[in-house]
Amino acid sequence: MMQAQVLSAVVYRITRTINYGHKYVVDLKYADNGGVCVSVVNSQGPRNKYPKDTSIRHFFFGESCLRYMDDSTERIILLENQSIFYIKDVRQHSYKIYYEDNINTIWPRSSDIYIRYSPTRIALCKNNAILICLWNHQVQERSMGKVVKTSFEKIRTIVSDGAFFEIESDKDKPLFRCPTYIAENGNEDICVSDVNTVVVTDAGGLLRFRYKGLSDDPHFDPYGICCDSQKNIIVADMMKNRIHMIDENGGFLHYIQYKNMDKPRALCIDEHDNLYVGEWSSEEIKVLSPQ
Image 1 (tube, one colour):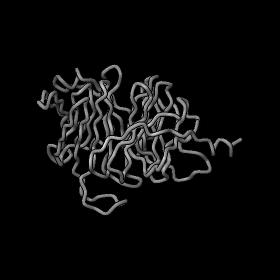
Image 2 (image 1 turned 180 degrees about the vertical axis):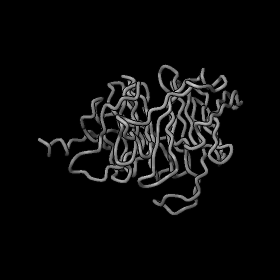
Image 3 (image 1 turned 30 degrees about the vertical axis):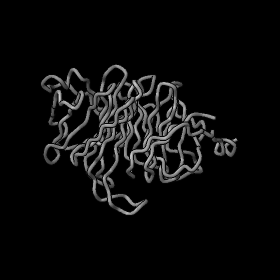
């Protein structure tokens, strides 16, 4: 039974591609009106090596528009329709959240919560809440992270006590080592890619489960994560060249496969459950649907 489960896979077809002309994709975001934003690391490093240059370039593909942003201090972005939210490093270990509408900066806000922790990814919830992954820039046993939940309204006003809800521990044990990618599921669960595991909590931050891959597949290394309309969780294991689909309770369903898969790293999904895949070494986004 376990062997049959391990071999389970669903083949998807590539329905279209989006070419952005750069390698090393780090994140994808999908907007409800069909816009897609691609974030890539600007690097001159050799193929298949992690680049030392960490400056970020962003490409926004709307219905008939290509928007290009290039700023070495921009970390992560998300879309609300065709508006862009991103976090900028204004000085060492100090960050501001920006909201831009039609390329005009509407509001920046900052908080001392970012002094010891730096953002790694950001996600937009259906109730207009924002989820932010934070990491303390340490390694090995000292590496720690947390997830912060806030709202547009609280960020637009002066930051005060209670503006941020922190998800950090379960029964006094740290939940995260280095949270990297994050998504909200349809049941409001918070799904986070961490070191060798996917951590899923409920909306209040209580741990529901950890998914560490299959027992015969050691060294699970999750990256991009998203959730479909059936509340299934889809996560990319770039180094193993696999995309896992698990149900809302952490049960393995199958692998997603497609032609010429090559290091899938960033994922997002649209309202029709079309899966957008950004591969680390590719210059195009592949849009997938089941056969």
